[in-house]
Image (cartoon, rainbow, N blue to C red; front, side, top):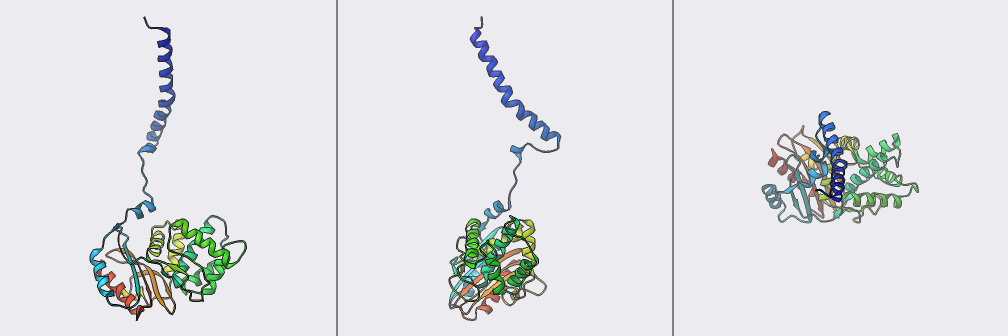
Amino acid sequence: MISRRKIIFACFFLFVIMVCVCPLYVEAVALTDAGEKPTENTTEITTEERICEEKEGLAKLKKKINKELKGKKGKWSVYVKNLDTNEYMLINDKKMPSASLIKLYVMTTVYDEISSDAQKDSSLIRTRMKDMITVSDNEATNALTASLTKKGTFNAGIKKINDYCKKEGYSKTRFLVKMGKSSPKNVTCVRDCGLLLERIYQGSCVNKKSSKKMLKLLKAQTRRGKLPAGVPKGVTVANKTGETGFCENDAAIVYSKGADYVIVVMSQNGQKAVDEIRRISGITYKYFN
């Protein structure tokens, strides 16, 4: 004969099963009836996860570029990534004087502030942004930087930009001195620039809408004498240059038939550096095409 205690335990066990299992079953059925799969079986790959799947490669290209740079004066850094396959190559990823490449980070920080309603978009902001990117205007850059905080000062603005860079993983980028002073204290690296451009390309830099606006500005660039000059006419290039008396830099997204790719070249105290950047650009384009 079954004891009263065992009957009570069995009833309690059945009650627990009904409470825990039945809601999950109902939810799964509802999702299925709606033409959707249960949540636990749905996996969405984000842009950042796709970026994290990158793999080092492009060995033949790296060999060609190293051969081109052999014996050249100055310090050189090069980053190339095939945006179709996530393969990349990297030469000397060190902090280098950014010159006007720092304006890429000013641009993204401003759009981040606008997207979070911390700053209002306006015709003045849009005009300054266009001037900063397409003609590399220094005064526009300093004004945008100062506008990032309620204090309206440059020092408060660069703190906002540096905090943004740290948050987004641009670990070797620092903005410290006003544009126009040609200071080596403003630094970045080819990998940071490449990651920023890739996020713009993927539509994940701030958000899709902001990425589209930033890409449009980079495609409207008027300074086309470096990386864009190394590819055939008619090839779409979105780029941002940077130069001082001691460095020549350029960072670009290149849309080619063989592959869309990011390329960033930075030089310090290089001889005939602009010509060298063009040659590296040409070598890279030929490799993919």
